[in-house]
Length: 133
Image 1 (tube, helix red, strand yellow):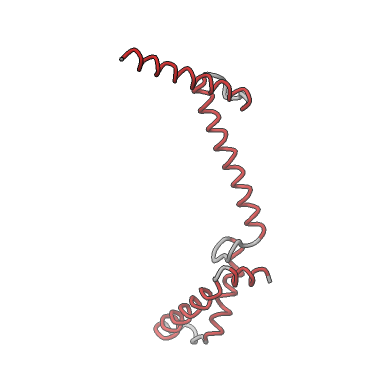
Image 2 (cartoon, one colour):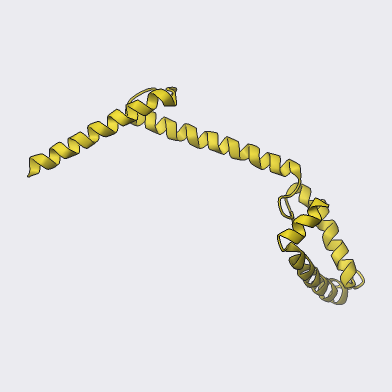
């Protein structure tokens, strides 16, 4: 039922029926008439076939509708957390190298080190600018 509400809410219901029509036209012209492999499909048969394909393949991420199934949402959230941790670790490692300390330092200790380094850099720039005048 949630799948149906997502289809309607996101405006995907019109796209579903439009692509069902496209699939019916392609099936009937290519598979049925030119190749002669299967009989032609009616519009409702094509809608049912398209819905069945969506249900079967949405578990693996193909033809998913809306947010998909809970397992995929959980996997995406987990991957997002891993990416966020990786990005934070890389940023922290870069700042730690720039501040001249170990990469294992805590953010609470690293913050004042970065602040001191920035202030020292600014002082040097101001001194250089004053010396040029």
